[in-house]
Structure formats: C-alpha cells, structure tokens
Length: 298
Figure 1 (tube, helix red, strand yellow):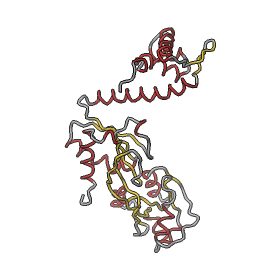
Figure 2 (tube, one colour):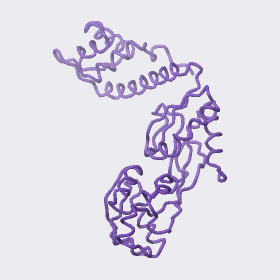
Figure 3 (cartoon, one colour):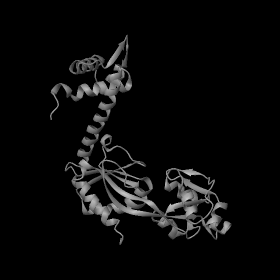
Figure 4 (cartoon, one colour):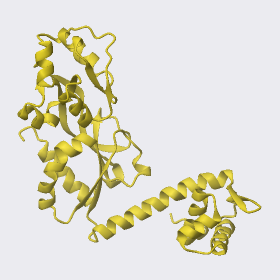
C-alpha cells in the first residue's frame, strides 16, 4: 500500500532536517549543505508543516530537538544512509550486480580474500563490498545483503547455509613448546594461556575434553584471531586457533601444536542472509560458489 503523499517528504527537506538535528545548528547545517541559513530554516519549517508536528524547540538563536523530533531524526538518518549506500553501489556497478557482505575479520582476510579472485572471474558482473562484523546484527537496519556467521543456527529472521565446522588446535611458538615440554593436557596449565574475547570459555572446554583441571583459567585477551596468532608467534603463550586459519604459519614452523589434541567446536561457520534478499542474483551466485568452496572434498 502506497503511503499518503504528506508522509513522503522530499529529500531536500529531510536532508536539511537531518543535518540540523545532527549538528544542533541551522548555521552548521547550512554550511554543510551549501545553502543559506534562511533556506535551511524554511525547509525545516516546510517539513514541520507537512508532517503537522514540531521537530525543534526554538530558543533565541538555538534549536533543540523535541522528543518526537529526536526519534524521527534517528529513523531519517538510517533511511538517508540506505539511500546513499544504494546510490553508491549502483554507481560502482551500474548493472546492479553488487553484493555487500559482512565478514568475520580473520576468516575474511585469511580464508575468503585469497579465494575471491576465483569467484570474480566466474561472475565478472558482480561487485563485492566487504565490511567487518564480529557479532549478529539486524539486517533491517543495515545495508547488508549477507553475512559470514560463526555460531549456532540461531539467527532469527534469516536464511542460513552451513559452510564448514571448525576444529581448534592448541598452538604456540616452537621455543615455548620446547621450554615447557608439554606431554599431556594438564601440562598446558603451566604456560600462559591466550584467550579470544568472543570465546571466553574455549580453554575450559578444551581442558575438560581432555580431563584436565579447568578451574581458574586466566590469561591475556584478544579480540581477533589475527592478533591472537601473532601473540602466540611472539611466544606470549598458547592459543586455541582454528587450524585452517593458520595453515601458513603451521607450514612455515612459526607456530607448532603444543599438543596434538584438537577440539571440534559445536558451533560452525554459516552464510546468512535476510529472507527478502534470498533471490538477489549476486547473493544466489555467491551462495552457490561458497558452498562449493567449502564442500568437504575441497
């Protein structure tokens, strides 16, 4: 159902209002929009008249958002961002073949990025934009077509495809392994243990898996696997890291298994997308490609 015209203000009116709301100043909004102060004031007044609602309290030479104006500003700011992002994507690829993909930082740089040339050569009309997200978000409020997610199949309101499970391995620098001479799981507790903030109980689960004491585990915290791996390479401690993300470091001997005792996580990597984007052609192409890339025999 089409909304009544009075509830669809023009973009110039909305842009003037959003700029004034964000800057808290008609003068600053006018400078940002390359307009005169009086022009911005007229546009805001026209918007208020069209909506039938006061958006600002006017106090001498200052303005202050009303309660309703503050809520409206948040909604309009998100809408203008989506319009801007859509316009930028269209300009980057006039054929409309753009996929905006949210990635996990280390998965994106270590696993996905080296493989993307194969996808782009197979689908030359598709442009991929990559942004980083380390946790779930609301697709309704983001100009994002799909996301790489690590966890359970529990992202409401999305379609999900399993990409691959994950096996982590306790790894460290060769000198640290030689220093401690690890022989069994319990020996790990003698060394500094490095932790990922998004998986605070990983070491406890690994220790319990191998019947070792899992109480009072402490150590340095890192927010990404990439920095966690670098800390392990530097000899700062032992880290639990997915083996497929550090294949190069293991092959080069920069990292070695502290013990050959892997742990497969109950969580896994998934490709997720909003249900209303399921048939978006670039998403369909990328989904088919990445599922083939993560097939067990690859």
